[in-house]
Image (cartoon, rainbow, N blue to C red):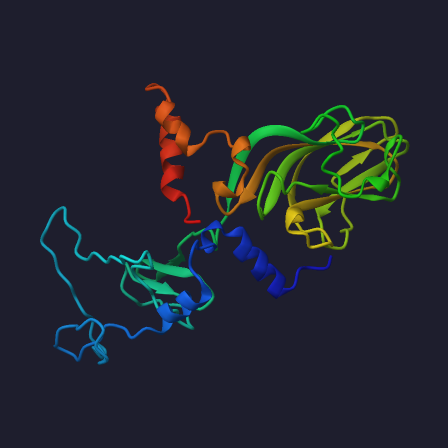
Length: 309
């Protein structure tokens, strides 16, 4: 299988990371923030904000102590809504013998945390990790025209010319566009069904934009309906249309009708999923009854995670 190039993969990773989109910050503003003079001071002297002297402690660690049981030891505020703290990226990972509790930002966009002696872990963020979310199930495809998101089951097909009266024609590949339901997701979870296959054969489901792999998602006998659970990565269609960012391809070795029901997505954040499909929304937690504490807790946790747009 041809794989996405590194640049394409990095592009999709950034687009899929909901927290990577910062609202209202222009390129000039970002550049000025990165090049502004830092607060600096000589060893043993007080830090003077905006002064052009270097706060160089050499090999010593600067310690700030606080005896309050409830107050924070350090609070940083940016009244212009810019970042309150910046960790300068390091070209290397932390050595194994750093003190537990240490953080390090790598040049590759990862955040390291030294959990215990000799054990450094990566902090899971929407850039380095994913989430699997169930959604309200819906029928994304039915080549029989018997029901779908808009009633006919064929409205999400990007290339309807591959269809015939008996479904997807033998040797053809159907492109199914799931972009109305997920924005730069990593994968889709669902159930695929073949109905009325005209011969023994197989169906292959794969992300759009890659060479069809030499694999099968369902193997079936002539005339027999068969279903199978599917987890498939999402790709982009060859047109590179922004409204076709989350597409899968479905190939059939023989003519057959196809049904595809979606049950979930793998995404960087819940907020990559169309709100109408979420099993609950953060706003709904206020109306959850008192005896539904588990659901309310989950909703509150999602509210706290909501990335800045």
